[in-house]
Image (cartoon, rainbow, N blue to C red; front, top):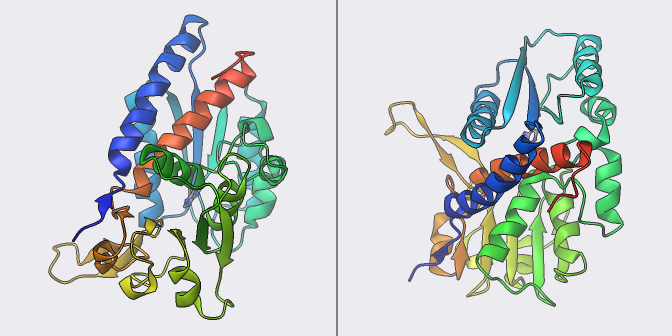
Length: 295
Ligand code: GUN
């Protein structure tokens, strides 16, 4: 028995294909969407993610500016970079890679980004719009990618029970809002570190979104047969059989494939979708700032 693969690479390729005509349309008006990515410090995984974002820009003909700052950069310096990018009319999207070094206040930095350039969708204006049930703004990329994958697999969400594991501002909380929003219409439970009987809550779910950052935490025995399982975890675990000494593991035990109807792989699941939705937000931001009606 094997679950069908929620193929993030294939779905991301479709999303990127649909963006091409919008980028061409902008180009006719001499507008090239432009994303600025700031990274502070030398966390290897964060550099891998940022490089993947820059490569996606190159693939789609989106301009990118990559600002790499040392880990001892002062918060005032970072504020200066964000403010300068806010002022530049040729920059449509600004992303500050998370996590920032511990001497910096991530929320303060997020709050500084011009909401119309906030392609991460983390600014209170953009998250607030989501709370109001308005899903036409800049939506956080990973949860938006999860919703696109579910749509791609034609998963019926209406009235179904969804469990979201994790309540982060980047994934869990916005994913729960999107699943419960009008049009998606799922009944959502948010499971977190203080939740009692987590396995029982998962077992009730038709859809499970795992975003806790704990390798293989969700076991096959926690799942209802036929559940749809989206694994958002990207955890590095030691593996001496690999030359580099580690491999990636999701939040879901691969044995889940014997119980679930659909399961997203790690890697090749949610990761490519996050990048595709970042490109989508960057194009949308360029359209909005250039007076285009958009999609
Ligand atoms: N770190 C992990 N995921 C993300 C993301 O989607 N955006 C940013 N800015 N940082 C991240």
